[in-house]
Image 1 (spheres, rainbow, N blue to C red):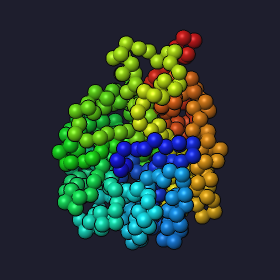
Image 2 (cartoon, helix red, strand yellow):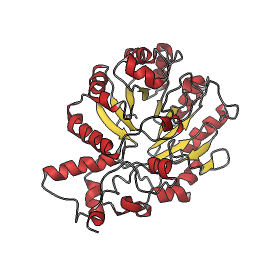
Image 3 (cartoon, rainbow, N blue to C red):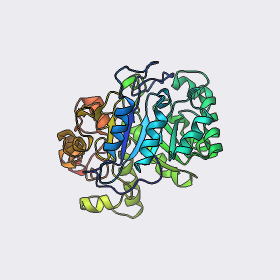
Length: 364
């Protein structure tokens, strides 16, 4: 996502809005949330509806970052029209294309000319053998490396998104070297949520999640690029725990405000700073939490975000069940609400892939 995330009152405004412009895509990635298809859906939001959506999103008090995703947004011929309109409204706009023949240097130049802030590219292995198996097509690794080069040539800032599974976690050290050598601005590490085709991918164990978070904390200071986790909310807990340990302190006895103050960045989660609009206009707390709250064809997205009961519950640490509700870190973490929903059917249930047990539980 472009630049550093600003401080936003996430009870009123999202930090990032994702619009899944289409589910059409030429690839068949094994973890695909959207379960992408070769052709566009006939009931996708029209160009006019998409432009109207941008108008409405500009109505938040703090204008959110807009990520135009898919599927492959290049499958829509009106992508540049939407980009131009969004940028003209003062919306920071990013595009997330797939590694297909549509992602050309000329199209990247057009995005630069229109004022796109950043593009994001997916890379899940350090070589063709590891990446192409994950993505479902031979040649996608080489094409992605070419996309890096094309983006650099036209001056288009890019980030690399990597999905971490039992299979891909072993490649992380090599991936860090590759991301740095290719000149990425940000490495976004996605922790798998078993939705869509991701149901068939190998979800890491809670202990593997914890080890991965500790590896990131130990190494990120040496990377020449920024880094963040997506759907890895417990990473914030691990980061703060490591700092407390270094300072000889403990979280017990700290107020929620003190704990929140130890995390300098935004505290986002599904429905908390995150807002998702599907290709059909349905509104979800995120693309990985498919709980429908309305549709932009009939509902005001600003009103849905601020007032829908599900969004309000997801933003309330006190509404969380189980150990997440008792955890002193829930003001900065809260667990992945999407993973809880996918694995338990309850978006407020305890995070299934977090091994941390609050003192209130261990003392019982």
